[in-house]
Image (cartoon, rainbow, N blue to C red; front, side, top):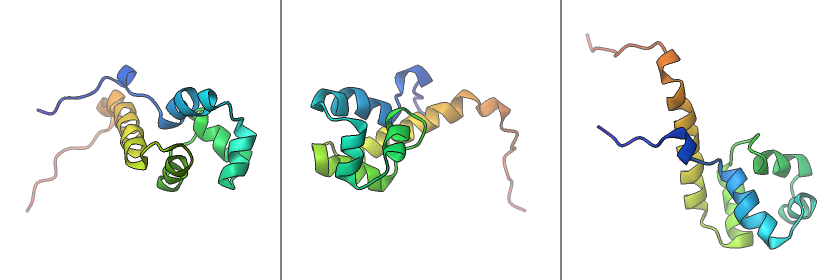
Length: 99
């Protein structure tokens, strides 16, 4: 049986980036968006947990701040899995058996 992470132990990659990277760097959302060549809305949605981290965005953060994109993507994936596991009992699918 696989060890499962409790949802409270996972964090959205964007929220982690906001509190641990962007805010300590003293850069504004608008400044970061301009640096990334993206809209303020797209960056804000990520940093506030309203949008998931994409691989392209993870690479932008890696290039700008040195945080490994692979690590950020694993963090995002763990967050998404924890959210899905929190309501897996609502997913009504039975095992498919080969004919």
